[in-house]
Image (cartoon, rainbow, N blue to C red; front, side):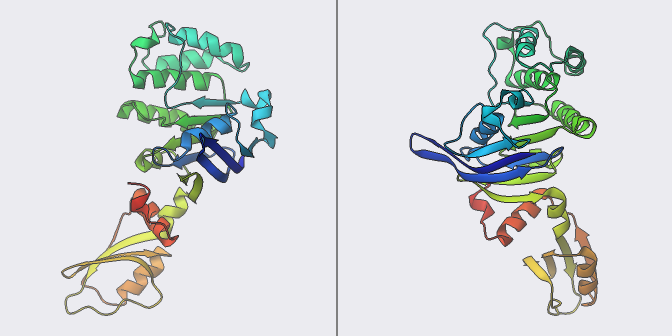
Length: 298
């Protein structure tokens, strides 16, 4: 369990984090969504124990991570701009990390090196950003972490590599109980991987929700009437309504079967349930909570 409790961090009188609190369950994949400058990278560094908060604390397995090196050995952070030693190769960096992570597993390293097409002896300063990120993902898994922190993990990776990374993450979560925190400014990148998304904005967790709850809570319908338009059924929790001629698009919150039954009673000439993307559901939930998503996400 990762517990972030009232974390505060400032830089030159600018407050990057202002009382952030959240809990990240063991074996979960937590998506940390936020625009550039929202404090995602700072929070990940504090969770990893490489940066000390000005106030509050981060507990991993009920221990303050900054003060316990043994806990840090179980955490691996892949930052947005990973650092590597000047003329080093992936093989050199593997030997480097093996010195600091007692659980470093060379069999896992070689298995993943075969899975990701990287020349282990080539100097990393000749690699693209995406290739460097692949190297550090291989190194991260080779340390056999219990907690994997990824800052803009999919940035610079092509679609094939993104899918491969998602598969490895899912495999480790299911087989080893790995806990993953993925920070990104792009909700679409989190949709296929995460089970929970938290929105970090202006130094605080503005909104937090399980993806299944988001998808199950809102439903979009299109319907029309042959003659006139009766009033909407009473009791519907309508959060969005749009009319284009006779075509009505409605977004409602609640049980999908109950909403369908209520709409059918109005005798529409046609009625269909449309898929709602995760981004749309997230925006609807935020607006219901009183936040203007357009001023935060876009």
